Image (cartoon, rainbow, N blue to C red; front, side, top):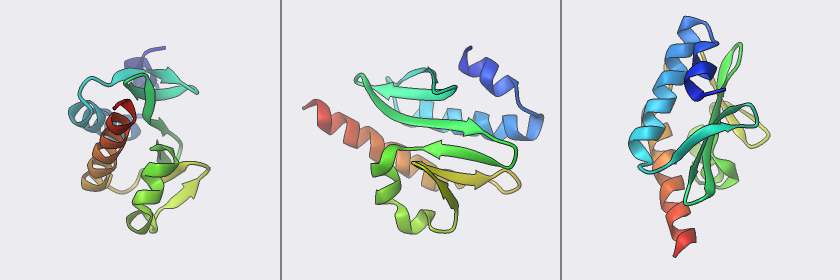
Length: 115
């Protein structure tokens, strides 16, 4: 399964949110490899996990590894959390500014592990 096929398997409203998530990752993580892992879109940079996302009935799950969630814990405090994830409700706009900052943080963190 490709990321396009994954996104295409959801109803239109959820599909649009997933497209926004994907676009933010691709725009802010240049060179990241896109694929499917754990049955969801997954992004790797420098051979190391970067972020994942997934669609669900009532939310979009965003997985930025524990460090991404820990760094932004205060700003994410208004959202439900799962194991290693934050849940953005599908009936509200995605907090794109926050998502982009988390992606950029993970890119910087990932780059520092390469040096």
